[in-house]
Length: 188
Image 1: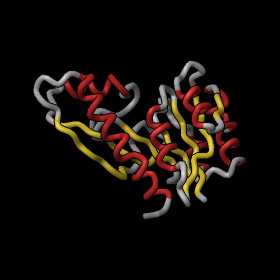
Image 2 (image 1 turned 60 degrees about the vertical axis):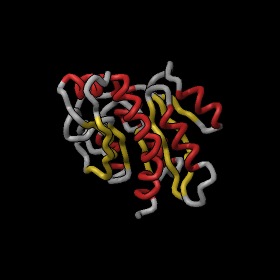
Image 3 (image 1 turned 30 degrees about the horizontal axis):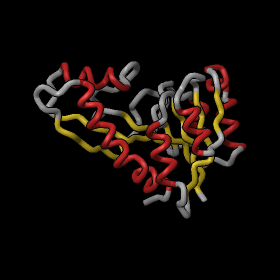
């Protein structure tokens, strides 16, 4: 059984979608959820889903304590599902080519520090892009620079608001992220 740890900073809709996908999976299980925001909606989702959750602060993350928790729990893969902090070197080294992230744009465009959520969709609309999408990529020590595993696109129509683009992007995330995780984890 391949064990996943999911990291989230916000509401946890992607976490819930991933957990549901793997609930009865014969080869992959979601073992824990980790969160850096004590006010995040994902905390209540984790309780409802019955998945252990650990809160952590920046010092615990940077010092290697969080990486230690994952190693002790026998975690095989780490998935960033709406997680906003830069992953420290100790975690990247503990899980080489086994940390996945989803970004709400077509990298390398609209990536980097500060480019998350609504900020990305506002930038896409402001630039007059005709398409946007999602990028699922491996994580390295730099924001949104790891090797790209998968991309999917949606049209950005004239007159689309950032909220409309966000709705389209969320649909792509829910449709593709769990299956791409499954393929990566199972080496397919």
